[in-house]
Length: 312
Image (cartoon, rainbow, N blue to C red; front, side):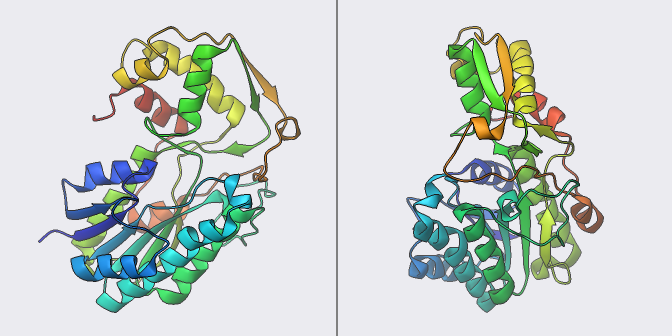
């Protein structure tokens, strides 16, 4: 028997990769925005009750960090209230719940990697709603794991990697924040790590996955850099592979990268509606110790992403 998994957020960066990898190893039902409105609790309950999954895998989220400052009720509905319903329904049918959270639950004032035991202190609406989602799952759920990740990018959709590649094909100079530190993490590696955890748990205890292992785990790339450092490596690596992968050629519109200079700037020189944590590096020790899963260094992830086709 293979696990029966209900995946939400199939349209998102992580959801797309999860659907691709889990379709090979599970009985998977993947739902996107068109199939499931997460602001409607009745739809969530109906979807879970109808499919009766062993695992509810919630990769859906409201992630518009700046818009959340003016749309907090909507962000809360998707990031907090919907996961609470999923946790309650999963508990009712005896399923496990996997949910993703974010570095924005922290204020970024720490100077060494955050552990799962550090006290959250979100700076804005997005972080508040994601933290509320964590708390709701803790209160409503029975068998759950929450994977906190950060600085997520993909080769499709809207994200920092694609923005830099596009701007790099249009401008000779890019001015990028250099005083925010984190670990850029490729959505495909998050999906692979999640699939490994599910597989290990299924072989360990079958349908009782995560029994005795509930809680929060950090799941990010190894290493750290700034947005400026990430940008510099994106440009350098993309120049090596710009005649390779079709998605990369399309992103830079089939012409050589134009950018000549990447200039470091301070956060204060690039104001945004939402405040960002200045330091978002995570310790992934608990994930590795508990599940034997470790994500590669962010530089290795970036090189792999830029050198491969989307479907590889």
